[in-house]
Length: 234
Image 1: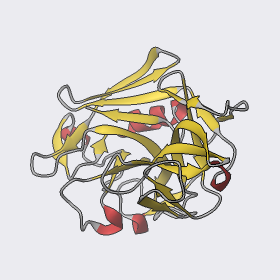
Image 2: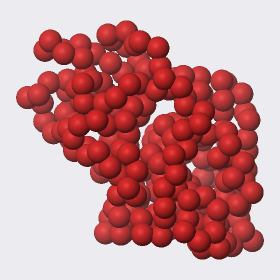
Image 3: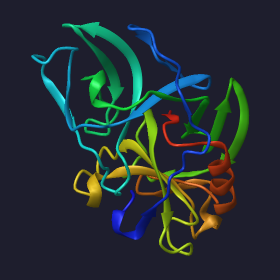
Image 4: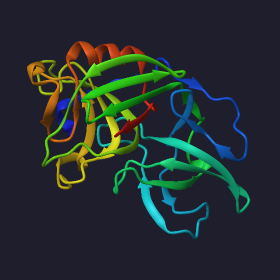
């Protein structure tokens, strides 16, 4: 898990493009081809359905616990009750949760053409761009008692460790995923994808749930992937 006080933030938006105007309805997520995300402009309660009367399923603020601008993965769009709604991925428990928020509470829709897949059985990370494999690397994942959770998530922020020689190595990406077992972990138990100061342990089941890469690999991934990228862990 990522510990906020050991990290300083960086933008990580070089490859992100604004989306063209989206239609009032339909899917906005096609991992590896064109997936959307948006930064949160106003604190908002996410709902179980596109209605202000629907059950609350999560709350979104303007900043993450790491001090970066909050963002959400955008899955689909619908018009209901006289306004546009977005179904979004949420960085809340239960991990992998989704909900509906008014379109007016987030900024412009941006898109990425990348998709990061983590294979826990093969201990391998693969990045897809426009339907083609552009990166692959061995990884470390959570130990049996601290498993890396499976599901669909997104890259929430990009972080530069205060010390390159620390446990997070040269770079870290925060995701929207949470540990299923370390619920009282500092910062909420978010799952990160980061470098390491112990490359000899990789590949393997070596972490508290985070995905570890060799520093050279995480730095290469940084040139290929931005925040907002969908992440599938299986």
